[in-house]
Amino acid sequence: MAGAAERNGWAGLIINGAVRDSAALGGLDLGVMALGTVPRKSGKTGAGTVDEPVTIGGTTFRPGDTVHADADGVVVLPA
Image (cartoon, rainbow, N blue to C red):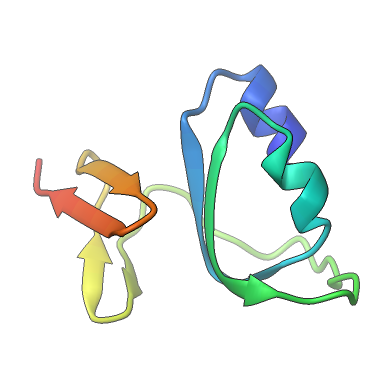
């Protein structure tokens, strides 16, 4: 999925969970921030929504917001 994001020109991903294959993710031209890493593959259920607010760590990301992130943290600028 991260490779598809990179091919589509995305700057990065913020994951409210764990990722795997962190070494491969580090080799992409894509910023990835996650709560941690895990060696186990996730299950796919097809569930999900688009253009809805998401709250991570007490901060709500809304459609249209601008997000800036670096190794020190994430800042959300409301639309």
